[in-house]
Amino acid sequence: MMNKSPAVSVHGLRVVRGGREVLHDLSFDVPRGSVVGLLGPSGCGKTTLLRALVGVQIVAGGTVIVLGEPAGSPALRRRVGYATQKPAVYADLSVRENLRYFAAVLRAPRSDADRVTDEVGLGDARDQLASTLSGGQLSRANLAVALLGAPELLVLDEPTVGLDPVLRRELWDLFHDLAGRGTTLVVSSHVMDEAGRTDRLLLMREGTILADGGPAALRERTGAPDLEAAFLRLIEQAAGSPA
Amino acid sequence: MNPAITLATTRRILSQLRHDHRTLGMLVGVPSLLMILLRYVFDRPERFDALGPLLLGLFPFVVMFVVASVGTLRERTGGTLERLMTMPAGRLDLLLGYALAFGLVALVQVGVVLAISLTWLGLDLAGSVASLVLVAVLDALLGMALGLFASAFARTEFQAVQFMPAFVLPQVLLCGLIMPRDQMASWLEAVSTVLPLTYAVEAMQEVARRPQVTGTLVTDMAIIAGCTLLALLLGAATLRRRTP
Image (cartoon, rainbow over all chains, first blue to last red; front, side, top):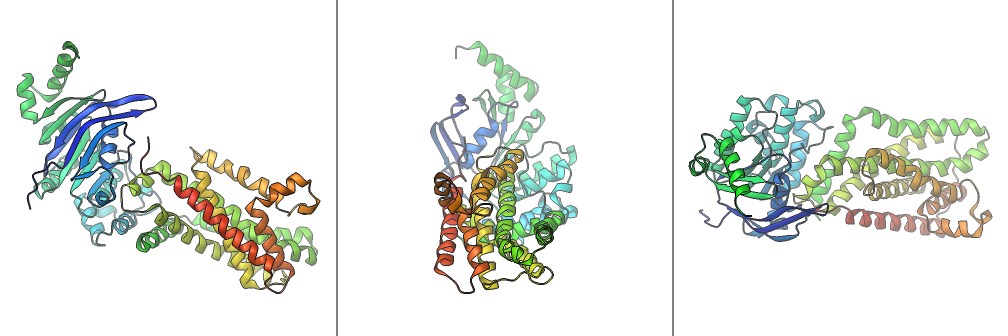
C-alpha cells in the first residue's frame, strides 16, 4: 500500500497567542514514512506547530491537512499519536495501568500495553507508579502512550530530552524502525546533534521556517562544517536579506 | 458516546483512588467521625434523628465537590485531558466515567456512615433506608457535577479548593439547615429556591420524618437529578478540544 500524498500538508498556517502572532504563514509538506526533525531554539513555536498538527491549537488562518483530513478531525484520533513535552500520564497509576487505560480509550488491543512498554525499554518499571519514575523513564512512558494502537503519524515533542546518550540512540533507532514500517514521524528537538539523525529537517526560528531539507543538503548549501554552524549561517542570511 | 471508554475511565479513577490510601480513608472516615461527634454534641436522640439524615445528605455533596474539582483540575493542568482530547474519547464518555466512579465511592461512603448511624449511634429513621441512600447518592453526584463545572474556573489547586466555601457555604446557610427557609427574609428565601442544595436538604427531611415516599420527596429528587444533569452539560461545555 503506497500512498504518495504527503502525510502532513501545511499551507499558510498562522497562529495568534496572547494577542501576538507566533506562527507566521508557515507552509511545508511531510512525506509519508519519513522521520522529520523540527529544530529550533526554545520559544520559536515548535510546540505550537505540533499542537496545530494534532488539532488542539486554535489557529488564526491557513490549512493543516493530516493524512488527507483536516487536522483534529474525529477520523484522525486513532491514526495520530501525540506525546507532549511535559509528560501527560497519571502520576498515581502504574505504567501498566496508564497504558491499559489509554489503550482502552483508543480501542487498541490489550497486548499493545506490553508491546509499547518493551519498545521504549520500560519493561523493568512496568508496575512502578508513574510518580516514582525518573525524569527519563517518565518521558519514555509518555512516548509509549503515543505508540499505542500503532498510529500512522507520530507527533513527538522533544521525546529525548534528559535521556542518556545510549537511550537516545536507541529511541532514534526505534523511530527509524517505525518509519521503515511506513509510520511518519515529526520529532521536535532543540539539540542540534539530533538533527543529523533525521531524514529531513525543518529549521525554525521566531515563528518562521528558516530552512527545509535533508541534513546533508543543508550543510552543503550553507558550506558549513556542521548543522549548528549551518543554522547560524542561515540566520545571518535571513537577517541580511530584505525580508 | 462509547460505553467501553466510560467504563475504562471509571476503572481508571477507581484505580487512582485505590493507590491513594489516605484519600480513601478520609472519604469514609471523616464523615463517620463527624456523625459520631454530632450524635454526642446533641446528646438528645430526637435532635439527632432530625439532623442526622440532613448531614448524611450534606457530607457526600461537600466531599465529592472537593474531590471532583481538584481531580478534574489535575487532568486539565497535567496534560492528560489534552491527551484524551486527541484520542477518540468523547466529553460525555469522560464525564459519565467520572460520575459512575464517584457515584460508587459515594455509595460506599454513605453505606458506612449509615451503618454506624443506625447501629452504634441509634439513629431512628421514619422513612426507608433505600430512599435515604438514593437521595445521598444523588447529592454526591450533584456535588461531583458542580465540582467538575467549578474546576473550569480555577487555574490552580489553591483556587479550586477555595471554590468549596464559595459554592457550598452559601448554599448551606440558605438551605434551611440552620434557619427554616420560611423564617428568612423573603429575598433570601427566593435565592434559596434556586439553589440545588435546598432540595437535597428538603428531601432528607422528608426521609427523616415520613415513612412513605411523598410527592415532595419525588419532586426534590427530580430537581436534584435535573441540576446534576445541567451541571454536567455545562461542565462538558468547558472541556475544549482546541485551546489558544
